[in-house]
Image (cartoon, rainbow, N blue to C red; front, side):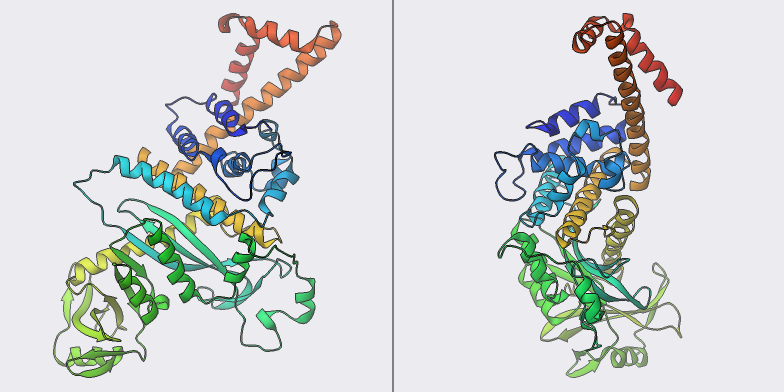
Amino acid sequence: MLQNKSTKVFSETNSFFSSTEKGIFRIMELYSTLNLHRLQIGQHEMPQSTYRKGDLLLGLLLFPIYPISNIYNYSHHQISKTLEAQKNTFYRFKNDCHNNWRAVVSKCNKALLSKIEKGTKRDNPLEKCLILDDTDFEKSTYKTEHISKIWSHVKHSRFFGFKGLFLGLWDGKSFFALDFSLHKEKGKDKKKTFGLTAKQRKKQFSKQREKGSHGSKREEELQKDKISMAIMVLKRAIGKGITADYVLTDSWFFCEAILTSVLSLKSHIIAMAKMGKAKYHFQGRDYSAKELSQVLKQRKKVKWVKALNLYCAEIEAGYKGIGLKLYFCKTSKRGKWHLLVSSNTKLGILKAYKIYSIRWSIEVFFKESKNYFALGKSQSRDFDAQIADISIAIIQYNVFSLAKRFEAYETIGGLFAQAKDQAMELTISLRIWGFILELLRIIAGLIDSDFNELIVSIMKNKPEDNKIFRLIESQLSEAA
């Protein structure tokens, strides 16, 4: 692989497409602006190394477009002849505990968001929201490093996997994943630590990581509680210059610790809250959410809000000494109450629900990135590779999200399909070109001529007089 292989990859790939093929053209343009070959991904590049880490990262980022499902399939794919690196080179890259994937994701996001800021009118600021949520990553085997049994609130069952905590940004038009951490659950069964028997834990993959390495720091996050990690990723994002008007969470993340942290970061929170035992101070007394709903019903504060098709009531109350706006809603007179809270007491219920509905953009991210970029579906037993694959999926999604925004595609799925189709044309042309080169080698052998001299003499011909070029064009048109 060349010292700056990424330049070669871009030039060779883009040469097969025209600017009218907007999907793939925009995606390749965005990847080029990330300047991956300049990224400091891990420790300094080894002088004897043939491959720069940024070039290897670019190769992995392009896999879904071609499409290549994993490194093993890459080794049998025509594009491997362009990238030149063997599959073991990619395996070593992903398994390297010194790679700082959090910094890589952050730097890529900074480059992408800077393109948005240049195109945004300063006199028309967009309402921004940071969104916290978690998702399940199910695994087929307990042998994956650090795997545990996790409880799924969606499937209402336990299975082997990781819990993924994610922070995302909604800038008013698009969603971008910013940061994540993986977690395992200890479980309630004392005989099965992390849901595994002693025999299963013994068979689980493990490796020693250098103390203080980025991989060892990710290991330490595994057993931290998600509330503490949520506060850390929020502070990290704000510290890197990400600003937001609101932080949106579901009821699992709403607590005093999150609330005080959000307010200390000069932002507001809008969250669902549980109809549980938590006390709210209202008119000199403490009430649970359920008790408050009964008080509002008795005082005839419940009204039908046509715009939401909900029965609603809103009041101001205190929670842990902090003033909040509480919004009680239900779908019918006999339905169950749901509670939405906001630290911005000036918000009416319509505005609060409109902003909170933005939280669903992270659910879309989970669904689309799992479908198109294999988020959380890594089959590697090495924990470092699990972190690498999720980081790569985040960068891929964010690039496609921005490309979709610039080119006005309705869905990322539509953009993905077009980009993949156009990349398939590249794959076909590479196959044909490989066949022609092999044919020329045979001819050179038959006529006792030097292969390189034969290629040079063919390339010197004008395109309209070049039978080789015309053959490629005709084969491509037939393949299409």
